[in-house]
Length: 167
Ligand code: FEO
Image 1 (cartoon, rainbow, N blue to C red):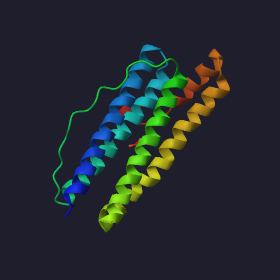
Image 2: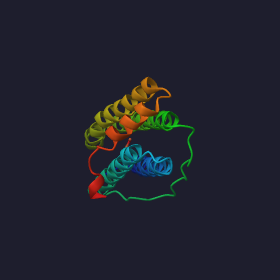
Image 3: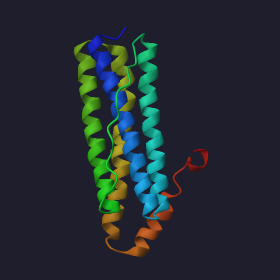
Image 4: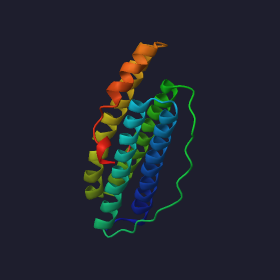
């Protein structure tokens, strides 16, 4: 059984993951409008992943006989100055989420809630991957600079991120 404090914190995390899903979908829409369809695909896949993160916590709260409470999801920004600016905003967001996951782990340890701690380790590992994959695109974008050919090639590469045909 989850403590009320743990349950509230997990419900907040569900909201944060849905916000991330919304944020990346907004970035996908921005890239669609910019006619960078590979970038749009990458962000759309990212949005789907965040939805999966939210549902993973949703299922866990239910499994532990907790009560899922969904709350309002903030509207995400809709415009960025460039592809680089969007990916930098994405990295800043992932770092924030990493901090939230770490706070959840601290709370689980404080409460000696070993089941929640064990569950959260998947997210600890996932955040390392999430930050690294966003940072890899940032490094590519910095290398490309103002080159339209470079942007074209990176767009094609990001368009290959899997799962697009399933959505
Ligand atoms: Fe669910 Fe990208 O953190």
